[in-house]
Image (cartoon, rainbow, N blue to C red; front, side, top):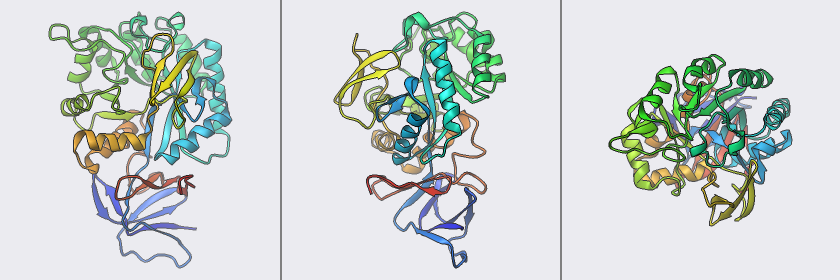
Length: 385
């Protein structure tokens, strides 16, 4: 049976217009607002609501008590359902640097989840955050497990994952990384640089070799100095994408505005970098092998107080960005939709509302709160409603 979403303001080509959306076979067709509909069609009346593409989170380590590094296939589904409630219709599971055995276990559980019936967001693939990272900027990475470039290992992981590793974070200064970036891309993996103290020239070398993003920009990296621009300077000067954690803790609102002014609205990707504490009260949690304490929603490593991911969700990040910047919704939405879709090479199917694309949609009310969510044309039952 066909479904129609009528009377809403639909976000198309970065503006809101009156259109009718037809959903059939999990795909979208955009129609005139006064189109004639089949008599037995299911109608969703969206008057007073804005219809926008589903959000995409390319960097998250967990939520609702589930840590990706310890997540079973069933656990992944818990994150999928929670994410959909927050407007995230697609995501990548971010595997923190771990042992080879545990990383392979994570890959195997991901594959099991792919064969399950799904009731929430699409788990599109795997993000490896490491293990080819610099110890000096390791953040929450276990230093003993960090290593130099190892293409045989990465190929082994990708083969085991059946091509589903879509994204990797590496440090340019790690031995062999710059030269291996083309080989990583040949495996179908988008390469980001981060957790790094790389100098300006080395960072630019990584970008010229094909790195396309900077991981949680301005966090866990050497910052800009007027005489030594370092990785930060290269990330800002180049045309690569920049991830941003917009929780008001990882980046000051003024820093967010500066990042957007330098990079432009087309090159910033809003991520959560959330951990298992997202959606839960303050307390003691895990991030990979690390103990984490969350106080006032702020996640920090128990051993040294270093910030360790976030408790952010994308619906909150959207409202934060609107508040931080004073920009209109139509300007900010690409950070959650089009930009991440282009970064991980799924823009042919996701990231905008257009004919033939997946029916992943979010409906926002007049306060830009989540009113309803569709994933693959299926309306998600929201716990809050």
